[in-house]
Image 1 (cartoon, helix red, strand yellow):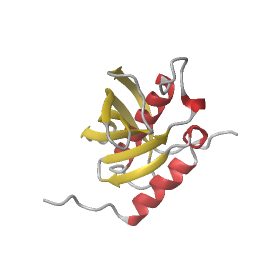
Image 2 (cartoon, one colour):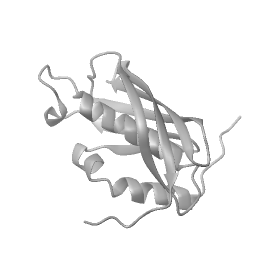
Image 3 (tube, rainbow, N blue to C red):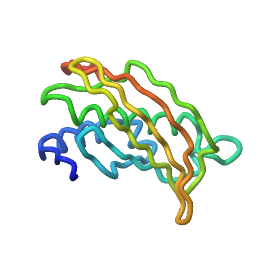
Image 4 (cartoon, one colour):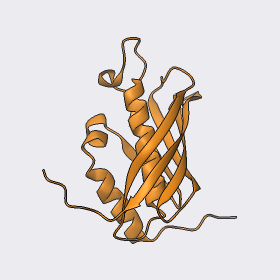
Length: 149
């Protein structure tokens, strides 16, 4: 059974929103895959993203997971609406190491106001894929507001 495709306008809105995130740009994250209720992001390894033992820092891991889940929810929101995280919990399962991290956000329960997502992060090399984090996230669907810069 194939998954329905997203309208091009939704993908365009999602990419524009992702591109507007200063943190994702600063970290070097990119969108790998987008489907209804499912988004995969990638974060290439760089020394600047590590903690004192040389693993990806938990802050970068959490930020990537948060954005993956947020954009998974965003794919199901109506045009003219935005997403904000209201809470998330992330369990760190293994040291986050690899050539890149891959974060997958998947909608578990969509809603008009609140949406729940499953978050999974993998450390990936050419020969190995290790589950490094898993969590749950609650997001809120909002009408956008003007933000002062």
